[in-house]
Image 1 (cartoon, rainbow, N blue to C red):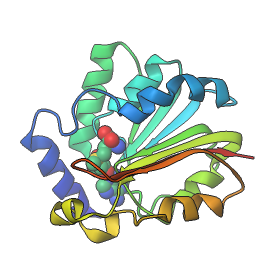
Image 2: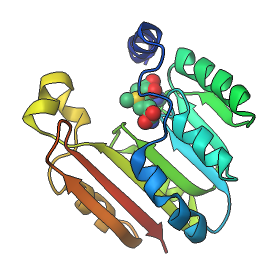
Image 3: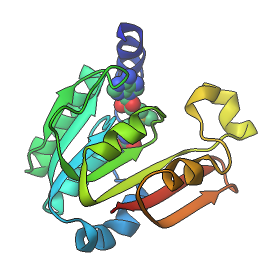
Length: 190
Ligand SMILES: C[S@@+](CC[C@H](N)C(=O)[O-])C[C@H]1O[C@@H](n2cnc3c(N)ncnc32)[C@H](O)[C@@H]1O
């Protein structure tokens, strides 16, 4: 949606770096497990923003496709990749209407973005044995003060979403202390 693109472009223009340059701590913690678990090296970064996680994956040998609605964020992702000496396939798309047609991935990551109906779609784009990593904000008074409620996970929701998919939850947690409660999962498709 054009309104989302404009909103996110404004955010990315307002600061040098919206979520910082460092990759997600969860991704950093799990990268060695992920490298052992994924059947191949084709990765998808859903709502990749400025590319911090895509670049990290590329540095670990993955061929990464990053999808995002913000051309400003993708421009920065391209510049950062060039500086880091890696390449990734960053694509401008609206995930609300996106369809994974014929795309196949060994790894899907989804950080700080929640579009519930996209999760089973992205799961379908995983090859057998593929890995899905999702980490985003959990509903809490702190989060509700700054975020649209529909974009926040409810307690227990992540487990119930992934329990319905064929595969195994290898790791799941809800971290409720701290400034921004978060839920995260590492899942392997059968
Ligand atoms: C909080 S940022 C997270 C960026 C990245 N995943 C990270 O953790 O660094 C949310 C991202 O979702 C993207 N986004 C929001 N709505 C979108 C949509 N409908 N389609 C594609 N991307 C969208 C924004 O442009 C932004 O880059």
